[in-house]
Amino acid sequence: MEPNVEILFAENSTDRRGNPGPVPVFWNWLESGIKCDTLRPVFEMIILKEREALEVCEIVWSICNSSPGEMHCAQQYLPEVTAYREAGNRSLSVGDVIRLNENYYMVDNTGFQVIGPETVNRRRVEIAA
Image (cartoon, rainbow, N blue to C red; front, side, top):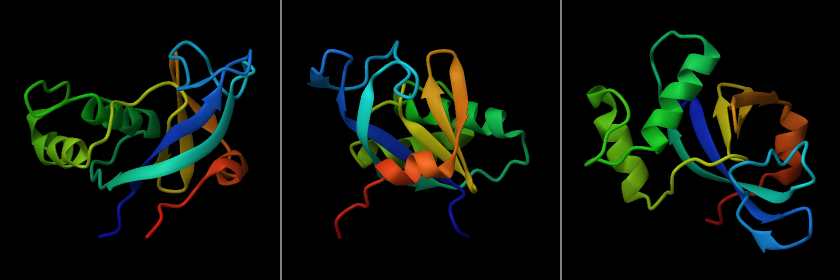
């Protein structure tokens, strides 16, 4: 079965003053003047439950912000949490993007914002083989 969820990290960002660094947790890079140069795919997973898209985003958020010793999601997602952390991934932050099937949701400071594929594709970089 093909993964239906992909995590993309916002990278190479600058703040409104042009200072480099990670996207600050209180800024939305689409609307605030934050510039996000790239979105780097870092992880894929399968979420089988038939749920509303935003519910799935919340599950993914919980998985990506958990660790095997500190679960913020249902215990059934322990294999995903473990694989995500063993891959060396950080927690999700504002500006990061979740692809669910063919739709994209950017993490913002109040939840998730739907964004178009053209916004993602302009900034997406592929993982070097």
